Length: 494
Ligand SMILES: Nc1ncnc2c1ncn2[C@@H]1O[C@H](COP(=O)(O)OP(=O)(O)OP(=O)(O)O)[C@@H](O)[C@H]1O
Image (cartoon, rainbow, N blue to C red; front, side):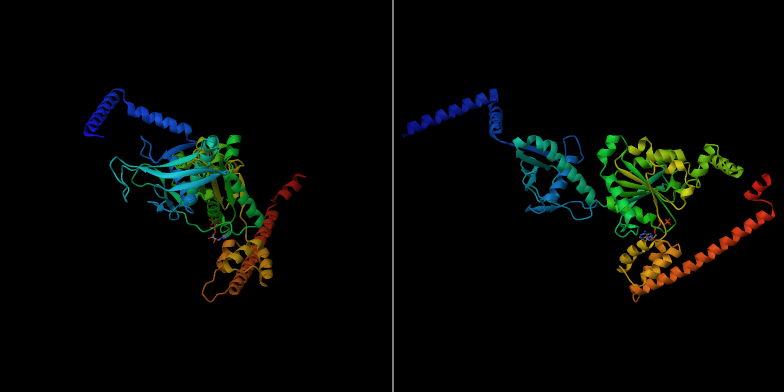
């Protein structure tokens, strides 16, 4: 080609570019072609892509779907991803949390179908990848799958991922033990404060009759999985347990074991710090799901029985009525300690409209005196399961011996079995004797200590029974001398 040809080719190209520029300016061709190319590509591309952004345009909170997916991928990518990163905050979690690093890919399988997850990030124009997170970085996960599985992935797989993500959060979180107290400076009444819940009791270490233990564990697990059942029958997802028995039989320990079994938080409600029913309701609203709300020694918290008797006009004595009226005048209706929480307020707390808010909950009341409680409070439906915590039986002792001494059987066990039947001893007393007091105390020494304590308890029990018998005989004698007693009345009448 000679110089002339080059010149004319150059001017032709320049003219074409000029015309293209003019047309494009006028008809806006580039986006049109881009859209066309995209459509063409989508038509032939057999894969679908869904993105899940960390933040939506109008929210400062991390998207719940993104967070759940993040957790799911963190756990599932652990074995395969080549680049992982540690979470910025491990405060709420029990262990160090690792997740897929940016631009990592993970292949997941669901019902034999492969899907691809990629962790991505967009940056503002003109910025390069930095080692440090920047404000303008926008993270998202993208999920790619074949279009023939569209329904399965959207309707089933994604729900599975979100549910798993939530479950992982529950498993990894540090559980909390809440208690309520009055705020001295503020007027907000009683509020929850918390510490990390670290009680080591489990159903493994809790000494109970084996059948009873199995029954309680089954009940709890069935409850925790019964979301759909409760929804179907139209009942709020909650269950009440009443634990009653003498002090030191393991009621509080059982609450801790329940919380550890179900991985629930515990709200230890101090009723005497609650001023009135409204405050009680506020406390309830501020509890989270997956929690146990426990009121210990409920008989000491409120004078519920007396109050209900007055309400129903069934006071037994004039003194009881005077005491109640005085309480009302002093503004402490039904309370033993300056609170105006009433029985009906408490009943509403357990199963009123508000009790259904916030997910699954277990209510636990403990008491040493079942007979002191108002029947309305403990009726089935409110307190669904009544659990009697008793004195230490031989079966219970065997669990304690295994836990504390590592001894499953011993020649001294026969003597201990006999003594346990003769003296009412609580598991707490047995535990006290099974704990070594010095480094030289071996298991057998502890068993001997226990035998000696049981013998003392037996002597004390016999002495108490004799004293009570004497008192009873004395009373009957007095009544006969005075011509009293039911039999006498009957004889005279007859
Ligand atoms: N059934 C049990 N299994 C294992 N340990 C027990 C059991 N019962 C009592 N203990 C031991 O005794 C101690 C006191 O038990 P716990 O506080 O649970 O009894 P309680 O019935 O709640 O007593 P209270 O009615 O006085 O509150 C616990 O720290 C635990 O070590």
